Length: 223
Length: 107
Image (cartoon, rainbow over all chains, first blue to last red; front, top):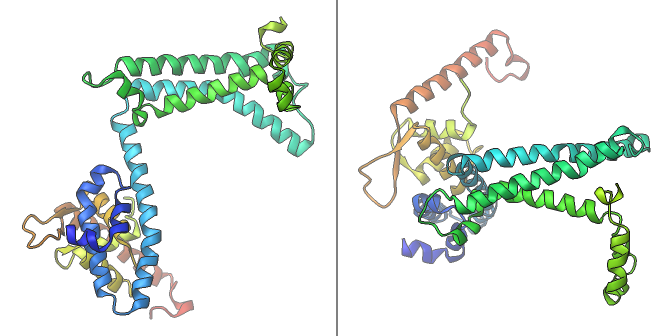
């Protein structure tokens, strides 16, 4: 296969972007077929047409195979509790996104907001804006800790499991989103302390902290 | 029965004549479609992988060169026949409804 690779060095390098198992099985065949196509092209313009079609065909199928690979890994090799708990966490975040989208749509369509509705009443607000995202974060955090300590194959070291995003990405994504929501909620009212004058906020860190503290969000401190 | 994607069906059709390697399949598909279906190697092997996983085609064990040859399996033949039956019935139905006449495609 070396000679075929040598004929298309860049194309061969790009084939490395296919998932490993697919590459091992089909890389040589793809190169040989490409070589056949170019050998049978009679004119320069036919060769240009082939390379142009390859420029579309290759990235499209690399993306498709990688999606299949990730999907297959998720379906076959991802621990059941990772899938289940990610789904539970995602469902816990659903009210937050539903409320935000409903409010946005109300603004867009009726030019009003839901700020005076029961959804923005203190108890309901605390539930969808704080308790549910916090619960989602805790569920994903505990599940991720389980994933790190209880890995499927015992011979794998825990620090390798940290980097094993392929089998833990749903948990990480939901965890990061919940943490983002909690941070946003916590500092929602105090962003003005920094955004108004970022330079001043940095040089007068003490004042900034006081301002942030004074404008902490809705969460229990107001009770 | 869910119909096969156009490309998969065309590959099965190309392999119905004889076992072929990748480039031969590609050329046959192009010829069979009168040049309307032109596939790149990426799409070809994505479809070949899918068809192999579904057990509709298989690799020929005695390949003479570095190229791998593919042939229809028994399941592949059955599937191709089922698809052709479906198309045959569709064409018969279209004739019965005289669906071709306005455009003069078939007499």
